[in-house]
Image (cartoon, rainbow, N blue to C red):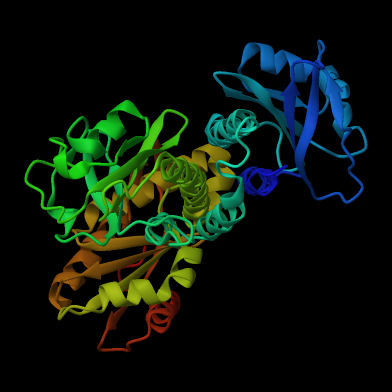
Length: 472
């Protein structure tokens, strides 16, 4: 199978995003009325999926017929019909996704031990990978009549797609995308353009153009790039010099570019961007080059979605699930970035820590829901009481850290005094709940008391245990 490495790459991406215990891809064989094993991933070395699964009335066939994803709980009777997983124990749920390009090309089955069910967002991400897989299955069927067309380039394409997939973030994907190896695709200029939801395009990364195209106004339907984005179809012009259509916009200077190929970067129906390359030679790009570019864009879409999902998961880990503010983990992981940002100006930086000392007893009194509501309300109240610019973090289970920026000592003392008075000897109404909140406060400053971020935060924290005249 010439595309087996690409399928393996997409299956690995799918498994990583879903925390899968096992993922199996079957392609449809309509003549034999079976689904044939194409690729699988498993954390269980003993898993040996059957080579074929017959068409029938089971959940796989039902999913293909409905053309909609199906989530099955492990205890659902239909789960017993998924014989490809009958040797795996302690699973929680399955996700079955049809693999469709114009018509059903196969089915993707994912098993997990992590949670009962798959969120709609996760199903949408997997649907995008299934769309990429379907496109490759379709292309492979089409190429059986012309095996020489792209077969020789597939190993190098796959190597480049793996290079893209190893990108740590979306910007890195774009940077790597413009470095297409010359042995794979001969082009003198390359650009990646991303579009916002309002139809405006922006040059993400580029190389090789006479004039920096980042100044061009790129819009849907305008020029080759805008037309490619609007139509969602690849475009090639082998005699661009005599073409009346612009590449990016009407006020451009593309220099001596004479051949242009452009292809959309798509995830499901979502336009992620456009990949365009140009050649200085007339007829310097061919239909074969456009096919290669389209394969690369397909892999780039998978990599962009994967890095986006990974970034969202990382962001969720760095935020407190109750209040939504960044947590202690964020302070640890991004210490250097935070320091570079807040210690770069001429103003001092103040670190004000407030311990909500009776927060545990508030949870005992009002329950988890009530306690969460109180905690959210208190964080919101503190945030509204401190003028911007500021950064607020959850430092521990019952403490909030406030970084106060671009203020002098007198202003910060006034802010601290107002906050203390807010809680001093009063019952507060927080999200409709009347509570009395007990607090302890600590303040430190940069550069007066040090220049290390965590030393200053620790000093502020330590001072919360010292007596304060205004602590209730």
